[in-house]
Structures are given as structure tokens and as C-alpha cells.
Length: 341
Ligand code: 13P
Ligand code: SF4
Image (cartoon, rainbow, N blue to C red; front, side):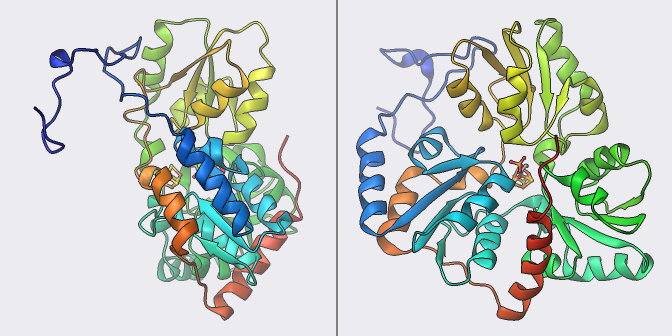
């Protein structure tokens, strides 16, 4: 019999695992998470805690959360909650932003290893260097960044408000950090501004090429392609719609006759889309089951960790007061700007 350290050969199983209809790769056996989800809800109530989840979290976590959404939606939820504790199921910069906006609340991240490669692509030192090169530019920083980098910026943005944020600035010269793909996409929407773009990127999105998306589309020519703006330019050009993860839910409604949608972003959003539109088919743009469009950081949290976080108070996020005060200004300026259309 196989031990947990030995890979299971699916052909030896008495009950074969279900396979993905598109790539024939066996999917993981289904687990009934209901008892643990009920326990999460019970303990969250007992501790007056709110559970927030990003759209890339595992489906069983999105389902147990009080709210699942994109970075902007989560930042707005954080401002509204009257819970004592926020259990943030996402990545570190998201929980850190929640703490900055709510210094009096306890903010927990169930696994402290859940970082973000894009946020790591800019450090305070590298931003300092870019600011020296472009002293007349207003610094717009994507929310996927550390508190220190936010504190050195003039205003933050997310994928849901980047164009509106740039338009709101009373300066024609912008330094956009850290994501070059989002920066290129947003610069095209505000041609009246001179936008200098830092050279960071999200490896999960940057690995996807237009040819892979076209290959996926060749077997379903009627499909509508929806892409996240962290994708490269060739993917953006192939897409019918480009928007934040939560905006994808509304964009599907624009195509009532379409049956199939190709989704060019991390595979976790497909859970939300399928829940909203059970009669439609959502295919990961890598043409597979999302094996490549996988954010290892977002998937570092599982349901037992969420329960453990509630029980044990793991892991409390703290931010230095001075850094928090600077970062709060950039976040508050951003939250005063409405979502893009
Ligand atoms: P959204 O704000 O669109 O959900 O994106 C967050 C993110 O990390 C994308 O990689
Ligand atoms: Fe960061 Fe990319 Fe993961 Fe989003 S998908 S959390 S940008 S590493």
C-alpha cells in the first residue's frame, strides 16, 4: 500500500480519480470540508472574528469566508467590519494593508510564509533609486507591495482602479511601480500622462504567453477571453476583457450567449465564476487545469490552518507605527478614488 511519501499511480486505484475533461490529468479526490467549515464558522462567531478571502484562495476557504473578493473589495471590507479580529486568507501584503487601515484590530494571516513575488520585486532601496532618477514624478504603487514601499509612495492602486487613480493625480508625470504589465496596460488608457514604469512582474501571470492562449482558443473558437492586467501584452491583446478578479464576475454577464470563457489569471477565480454561472464553462488559459496559472503563495493556506488561526491567534500581523502612518496615507488616497468602469 502507498505511504503518503510515495506517489499514487492512478491506474492502480479501485475507484479511478475523476480526470480533467481537457487534459486527462487525474484531479485530487474530493474531500467533504463541511464539518470543518461549520467549526470555522462556530469559532469565528465565538471570537467575534471576520474571515476574509481573496478570489485565488482554495474553494473551501472562499466558501467559508464572510467575504471573498479582489484586493480593492477586501480593502473596503476591512474598513467596514466591526469584528475584533480579521482572519485574512490571502497573502502578506493584503493582511498588512488590513492592519494599516485598522491598527486597533487584531489581524491574523494563517500562514506567515504566504508572501507575494511581485511585492518582493521592489524594495525601499530600489524605489529610492527610481525616485532619484525621476524626482518630478508622482509615485503610484500597486497594492502588491510592502508597507515600507507604500509609505514611500504618493498613492496606491489596485487592478480595479489603476486608471482612475492615475487620472485623479494633478501631475502629468507618473512613476508606476512595481508591475510592468499592469503599468503598460494602464499607461495606454491614460495617454495624456507620461508614465515611467518600474520593471517588476508577477511570475504566475508573466509566464503565460499569447500563443498558449491562442492554442487554448483554437479548440473553442467561440470562447470569450478574460485576462487580468498582470498578464503580458500579447495576452492582453488576445483578450476580449481585461479587469480585476472580481470584475471578471460582472464581465461574464456582458456575454449572455457565450457558453465558454477562457480565464487568463490564477485558477482560484474559476471557483467564484463557476458558483455565479453554473451553466457556463470556464477554462484556464493555460489549456489545462490551472497547473501553470498557479500562485504558490495564495495556496499556502488551507482550511485546517484557518481553523488553527482562529483557535491559536496565528499569526498576528504588526506594522511599525511610522511606516504604517505613511502607508495609510497612500492607501486612504487610493480608497477615495472610485473603481474603474
Ligand atoms: P486582484 O486585486 O485583481 O484580485 O488581483 C490581486 C493579485 O494578486 C493578482 O495577482
Ligand atoms: Fe503576488 Fe502574483 Fe500571487 Fe498575485 S498571483 S499574489 S501578484 S505572486
